[in-house]
Image (cartoon, rainbow, N blue to C red; front, side, top):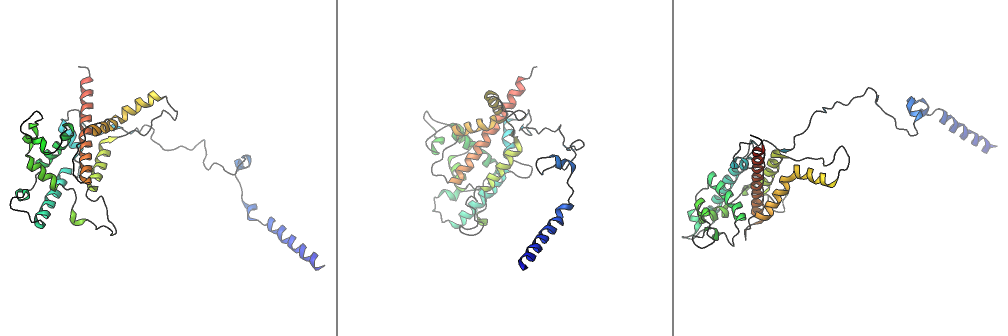
Length: 290
């Protein structure tokens, strides 16, 4: 008899709990009852409008280049921003590093370092100009570019600067301040601290000077291969051609530290980009009817 009373009590509790459930008080939208799943629209499809400027179209391709630019103007676009100048940075850090070496080294009487004088802005520009030229004119050593006789003579190099001066700049060439370096194994250590300022600079300047297209299809539809290739070549040609120029004309320096090879790689890339943009502008101007 006691068991029967107990079962009855449990049944009453469960039944009353179901009837008093909070779910019974929830009012569902009218359209929710007609849908096979619990999801329903939270906006009125007939009156809702998305505030989007459909007339906006981002400009792709080169940015800020004028048709009357000289070749040097194109090159300067890749070496300067509104608040930074890569050559100024190289001049400051090269002279700083040379002074540090002069105070710590004990050179012999006839060492070349005794003849060092602070490098100037014009000299660094000339140095940067000679580096890509060494990729165009292939020779076996740096010294051979200053040969004064023979069938492989290249007089333009010694007309720009002497061999000893070029090698002195190459020896002390620097892009960062060694006094701010975090030692290896310490928090904040950066293995690329010597080249990172230049990498960050070129990341910014390449983005400022060229905008790439993000869409390679038309209205969401897959297009035929020839059209994809044409679209890619039209908007990304500078990137591909720049890689080809770099592959063929990148200078090869033996015994040069890795970070300096990266620097020369970036400078050669900037030179190739400026050449291609100048060539494209020349073709556009000369293709217009008189």
